[in-house]
Length: 351
Image 1 (tube, helix red, strand yellow):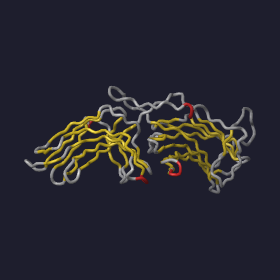
Image 2 (tube, one colour):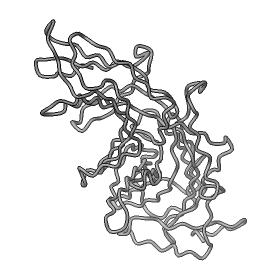
Image 3 (tube, one colour):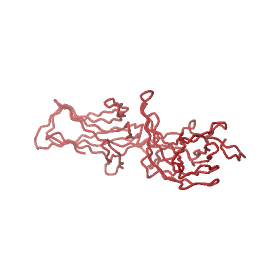
């Protein structure tokens, strides 16, 4: 990547093994997609800074040249108050002058990168290299963004999600998802079983809801968006009907679940089951799930594997609900109430 020093010189940052390093596309603040070289936690960052003079035999004076590797969180409503959770510096040259094209090798050895890169609605987390040429009047700084993926690992015997929801004397359904943790290339498999249908349902869909939470207390900003929507039924169901669910995640723009990153923000995902009746009233039930990035490379040598152990205390076991939990739901209130069926219970309404 080239950066201009006015009419005097150009700087090129060339990463080691650049031609073989994987790149990923990331959306910039300009809304466009850009290619960034991909790194992992514990991986060294090496390369060379090239300073090329535009004119032969010219003198290029400077007060020192350095390169930094920075991990930074920036909240959009608080610009100028960035939090650097990583800041490493390598001095490339002491004050002096250059009379010819010069190369400066650099290395940041086995760098800890605890979080995944993220570009959200109200916050961004970025890793970048910054070259600074100190000059008498104005310092010259240029930056090169890098992408970081945080790899995770969860046991294969993940708990399924099984729940009964309903509106008293109107609707009683049971839904089941095969897991509560999915990697980003996974497939959500499940089914919907109708136990009681006394309202005219027009269609049913499942959506993946992303919720970004920034800040804390009274300064909390919460924004949700549907990142995927999939119609799983068109037309009125009948009692006893079973509707299968199969949703492939690979085609959607998803990130891993993030919790209290740098004490600044969290990103959560939910599966949102939505039913719409013939009067266009909407009934829904949300269920939070964990998304994670599965390792697709062999992690060896100086690359430390990033492993997030399963959070058993928070996610273990099938979800349960008290039998006497209230179920009455007015159509104007969007969420269906949850209940638990008991063995041998053939009642039309959920308990």
